[in-house]
Amino acid sequence: MHSRVCAVLFACSLLSCDGSAPAKPHATSAVDAESPAGRAPVVISSDYGLGIIGGATNGPDRHAADVDDAYAVTLALRHTAVKALVSTFGNTKARPSADAARRGIAALGIADSAERVRVGSEGFLDAERVSFAPAGRPAPFYCLNDGVERLREVLDHNAPATVTLFAIGPFTDIACLRRAHPDAFAKLAEIVALAGSFDGRPILENKPVVDFNFAMDPSALGEVVAQDDVPLTLLMFEVSRLGVLSRTTLDRWVANGTPAQQYYARATLPHTRYWDAIFTQTDGQALFDAHSVHYFVDRSAYVCEDEMVAVATVAGYPDTNAATTKNFFTVTPLSERTEPAESGVQQDGSAMTYTGRVRGCYAFASTTGVREFVKAVEDSVEARNSAE
Image (cartoon, rainbow, N blue to C red; front, top):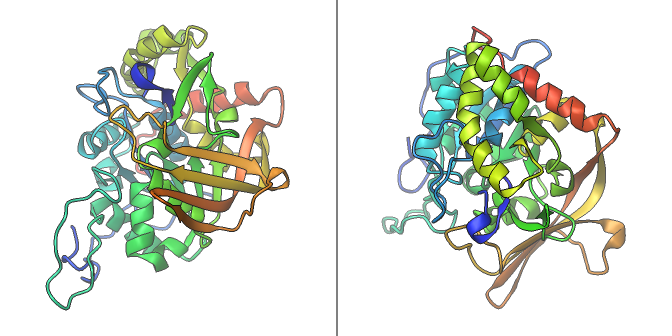
């Protein structure tokens, strides 16, 4: 997610050691099969939090893990062919996040959730364990994990420019895919992400909040921003803050909903209570990450600009509660730029600046946009009773 409250208020296999081993054979499954007619193949990188046992573990403040990723996933399962969901650290550790994602998908009646979900990164892109390659061997990619390898497998099984990646968690595994498997990364049709704001200082109900997907691994997002191989679309805070799954809906699901609705409501309410205690005007669950999939399903719903400039300034990694006092991520129209906007990476002392051209979406196109978005999310929570 996305935007979280700062400080106390933030709402917050492997290859051989040189990374050069050939791809392991794997059995064909429903996930690898041809996509159903009209269903675009997609992959998801997510810090899935719905139903996390023990709550969030990304900082000193202990509370229920955020759940908006789960509603992005339900939308994707309803409208696309989800080939992989790679869990990453963020709301919690990657492995319990993967377990929670399997439970959430299974609750929808989808049978192959275990095959669909893979475990990704447990830490920062550039803070992995230190090891040494044997003499004369190429430098290894220590960021590799089962999730990254699954992304490569999916891209190898599909034609170039057909698979879209939803980036709804820290960008660690996405940057690792680009480093370790650049040819596979370049086959992506598009990356659609939840990140960015006009001034890099998002505010919600007069409280400073954190651009969480950027904050948790800022240089990883920076590397993806600065590359030119794959188009990047950002659903910005100015629009992603809109849309709430109401307490009325959640209570109705608990009382009279389908088994899937009851599961999602009961797993959502703990975070809703935490969130509503901070943001008194919300009265429900904010749906930040779900905007990324809703945009993909209905691009006309949003006001976007193609020629926007994203700049990630990274002067240090966040502290344990994801505060970003040294790191800023801004997205501005090219016409408003007074400085050069060439894609690339620059270093100034200890600070790194990553610059890239992106498509930025910052508003709904109609006055009914928020209502239609929430309705689409609500409709996505129902049992399918089959693999998709």
